Length: 177
Image (cartoon, rainbow, N blue to C red; front, side):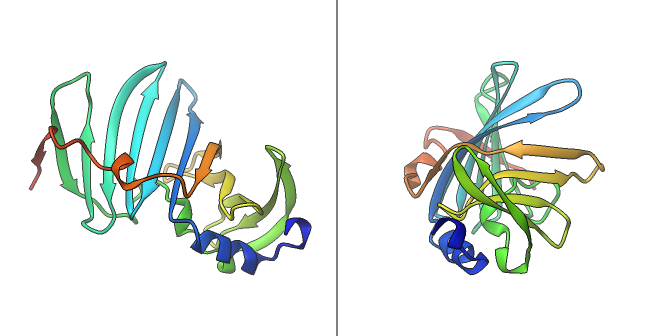
């Protein structure tokens, strides 16, 4: 609906997102990390790389509250553990933001898409695309007090399949107790 989009429209569009993919680069003072993220059926796969080298692959199951971490360069065994989606170490899931509880600050064009700038109760800012109801940029302060602005690039909505977020059957997983 473009400029006639309401916050309610964004919340409805967000509720219709069943899967997504995006890429992002997080810049730190000394280096940067590149992430590719797939999400479908309440499962997420995150592949990280730094300086062009594959670092780790993470598989999150939000229903089972499990995380499987695999570092291909280190060994052939993945480590599984319980995880808390509310933990500061949990990956950001853009579907967790409740737009109806946000304050609308204005609008801006990002990647040729009209985005509403919204602020969460925690103070994070979201640039939410009026096309998909999905953020294209986020500004936040991490648990250490550092301020970051992170862009979501090459976003795909409702094109990801369940097999793209499953860990490989032949991957040996040792669960920590």
